[in-house]
Image 1 (tube, one colour):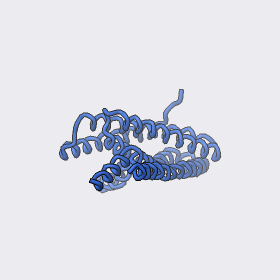
Image 2 (tube, helix red, strand yellow):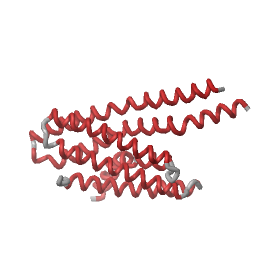
Image 3 (tube, chains in turn blue, purple):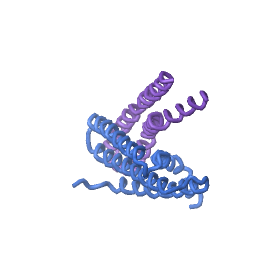
Image 4 (cartoon, chains in turn blue, brown):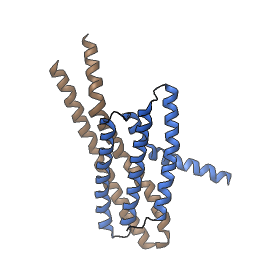
Length: 131
Length: 93
């Protein structure tokens, strides 16, 4: 069985926690705007699950690729990216076609890791300043 | 009327297809980043942890371009046609 690298575990946990925080924020925005119902919650959970799974699989791919030579690593990451994109497409398709999910909640949730990674240097800088 | 609706649906499908062209870029970019990271770790094996963390974040950011394309394509296929047809029908009333 594949042993998951501790860096991958740490970063995936970080992304998962940050996605939950962003989800709470999104839910409160929907609630304030008066659009909230159970489909928003389910769509949000579905989208966050897809985004975190995608990040974790990317981490696993990177971990495996680092032990290979340059050419093999390159082709492995390209194949993995195509596979993960297809997986995300399937997740989004289910999110769109099943009425129990709010399409906007699913799509916005997929972008949470990117938003948090963008904010990360700002947060790290603040904690450095305090320390 | 049918022709107008057909053009709307066709253009939405065409737009979704064109948007997905952006899905090619992240794969190439990530591949190059990982290849360079392999080189870097080969040169300095003690930096493996730092390189992996930085590269994971870089790959996640690179992949967002493809994700944006996917989101746009999905919206063009499933949401936009209904909206455009409604706008067309409203304008004809």
